[in-house]
Length: 206
Image (cartoon, rainbow, N blue to C red; front, side):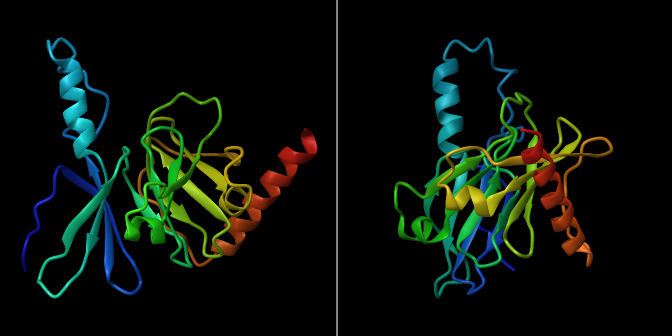
């Protein structure tokens, strides 16, 4: 066993199916939450800039050495991560009301436009999106919002098809206090049908 140093606190991590790449959510001290303890620091802007540089999705490449190497970093404030079933996209909860969607191929190649869009719950101003999961058919994304005690549901396939012209927020599932981890039961197909029904109801009401 060996340990790999990273620029800041690691949170979520996923590995591509071929084992060649790993994506690590790097947060600032304190989980990447807004700075409050240093709000009176005379060089607050500089402190924020330094923390911002350490945050983001770390792209690691596995080589012949025992440890994967950090080859680049995608800016942002990621927390929990998940890959789509086809391995084409990486979703990272953004600490706000949704998740960033990143092209895996672009991230591996170091392209500047690796972030293809953002799933957002519209006018909600809460802060707390912490984990994300993708349905087995790749159509829906579920984001646990620790701050609002809900799981937000997004139509991921439609968002990708329309190039994120809107947030594609389907609705929110109320939960008990501070939901974090997400996992699908064997009845996941039923969850997907429920998401579709909720979406159809909202569309009919417009």
